[in-house]
Length: 171
Image 1 (cartoon, one colour):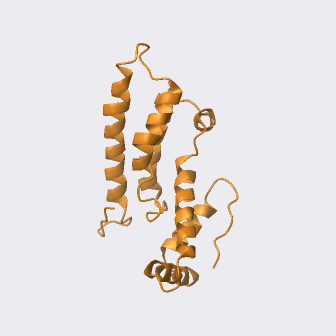
Image 2 (cartoon, helix red, strand yellow):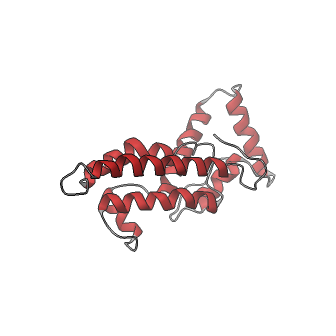
């Protein structure tokens, strides 16, 4: 994880570095494979396997701690993700977004990152009370209840802003 305390979003540099790494992998490896395929483009099922093997790890890296509350930072990853998915299907930049996800059977990046953060929350709840990470969770919940910024509060914001109803976080 890369932190920068001089900007409003301390994880902005992390998003920028992960976007760059994902773009490099995509343009150099996935598109490089296209040149070796006779038709000029990989079949979507192979492209999707490469997506999960090489790109998803960059797009979801650190999402359990870097919650997507800053739209500008998240838009960098999400825009690149849409480019990848459109390229896998071989459609243009004006194609519908919902169709990309339904045709490939992929969760939207915002939902995937929120699910991974929720899995991490479940892990934290399973820890014993004296574990440092569990104590941090209790403190984050206390800060949220006092209307201060915290990881737990950021996760609640992300869940609230999903395009569908999500359960509220326990207190």
